[in-house]
Image 1 (tube, rainbow, N blue to C red):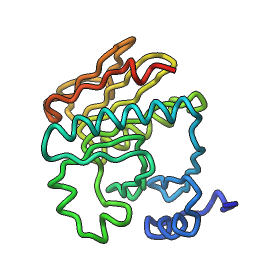
Image 2: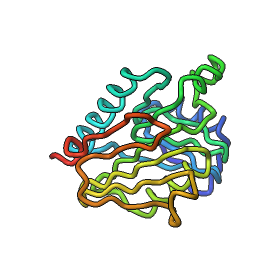
Image 3: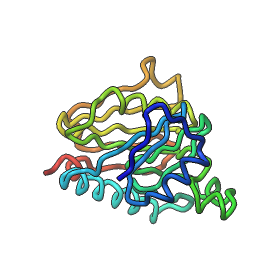
Length: 194
């Protein structure tokens, strides 16, 4: 059992030590050094996330130059936070530019595409803050999937594409990525299904 005082502020290196000492814990680190405890997902959310990662992996195998990550992989962002998107894509050249030690730990980069899949217990505002953090740390595209609403919030790093931080797609059955991810389409019916 992991019990830490709420006032504790960790550096990314200290966070890595806490994770190594508690491999069963599901944790993230906020930019201010606050430890964020995550709970395991339920069965429906886990199955949805598997369908999502499968589709990303299938796309990455048809095009060169991408690597796919699932929800247990943490990334050390420029603001000092360590985040674990439910699914993500990184350009292979960016991945290969890292040292072996950087790849073994929490890679010091923000994925190019980040996807968060809301669980029934998730609060919307913290998920939106997380998406905003990904974009401000260098993600080119972010998708926040809200299965109960059958809605996707599309977050973009290109300020010319939208006036608000995100645009919402309601009751969509397909999700097409921007030109940065040529040909990437997610079949949402596989994600929305129970």
